[in-house]
Image (cartoon, rainbow, N blue to C red; front, side, top):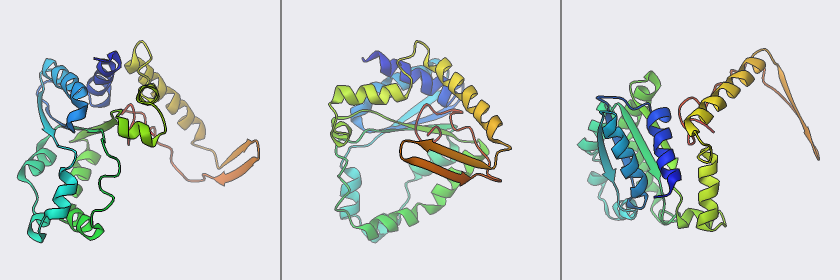
Length: 227
C-alpha cells in the first residue's frame, strides 16, 4: 500500500473525524478506493468504534436514473435513513472512474430524486450543524480524475496527497499548525474593513466590513471544510 494512504487514514480518523470508542461510523466509497477503505476500517476498529461500509458500483447511479419509475425515484432507503439519523460520523470517498458518467441522464429525474431526498438532506445538515453528526470527505486519485487534470496518475497522486500534507512526517501535526495559522489571520482580520490585492496586472479593492471569517481547517484535511 502507498504509505501516503496510511497517513491519510490517520489524518481522517484522528484529526478530521476524531473517531472514538463506541462511535457508529459509516464509510461510503466506490470499490476502486478499497485500500483507503480498509485502512480506515482497521483504524476505526482499533479505536473501539463500530465501522460499517457502503460500497457502490460506479454505474449504479446512472442505471438508477435511466430506469427508475416515479415511485422508485420517490423511495428513500431505510438504510440511508438509519445512517443519517443515527451515525456519529460519516466519511465519503470521491473516486470516479468515469467523470462524465451522469452527463446524459435526465435532469428532470435528477431533480425529482433530489426532491425526494430533501427531508433526509435537511436532517443531515441539522445534525451536522449541531455537532451530532461528524462528517468529512476526500478525493481518492483515479485515472479518470488524472485525465481531467491532464496529468499522469502518479503526478495527480502527488498533487492530491500533497494537498493533504501527507508528505509531512506528521500530517496531523501539520494540519494543527495550519489551523493555528488560520486563527492568526482571523484575529488579524476581525477589525478590518477592506482588502487590497495587488500584483502583476492586478489592483483589486473589496469591502469585508461586517463580514466574519471562519477557520475552515478545523477538522477536514481537504474537502468541504478546509478549502
